[in-house]
Amino acid sequence: MTVLPDGVRHFPACLSPEEQRALLDDIRGVVQRAPLFTPRMPRTGKPMSVRMTNCGSLGWVTDKDRGYRYQATHPVTGAAWPPIPDRLTELWREYSDHPHPPEACLVNFYDETAKMGLHQDRDEETFDAPVLSISLGDACLFRIGEIERKGRTVPLRLESGDVLVLGGASRLRHHGVDRIYPGTSMLLKKEGRINLTLRRVTKPTR
Ligand code: SIN
Ligand code: MN
Image (cartoon, rainbow, N blue to C red; front, side):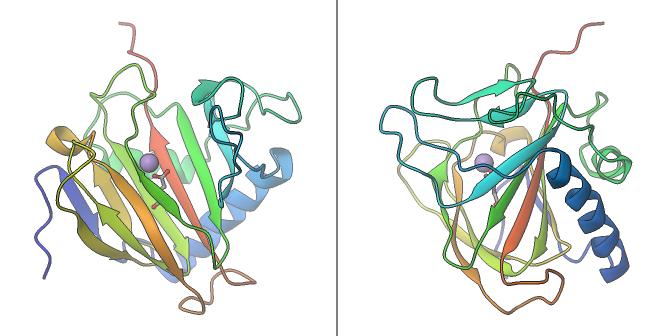
């Protein structure tokens, strides 16, 4: 068994197949209102292989000219992001160990060839709250690195219905997705994986 670094918590099969289907319905509702878009790397404008959207008062976006940031509106439609579904807020309450509600939920869609390079989640104003991730659909090979860019990494297979928390001493650890394992889940109509990450973006005011 892989020993995970302090602050990384993995809860395999947290969501039953029924709960996964219900959450997927919620996410379909989000995507209807806030369509998936192709994010582009800062400066180069190179497209990322995932497609994404958000729900919550703020959403994470990136493009060539303005780079990584949170904003209140969809970059293509200009509309406010739809609210975070109750089911997700409930999971945050259960697993985040944090008193304030999440403000952003990034929805990443991976087709069978998509991946995500090692990176840190550091565009938030505060790192007091953890990042809570929920996986749906095909399994993936996730990778957890150090806080520094270089150094050892630990592989971790994430399956549909798993919850992963990056918090405390591991809040700023590098992480990424090496590959998707197509055909390992029947949840989605086609092959692919959805990952949801709930985040706190601003410092809470009293
Ligand atoms: C992310 O780091 O934004 C996504 C992680 C994942 O897909 O599991
Ligand atoms: Mn991330």
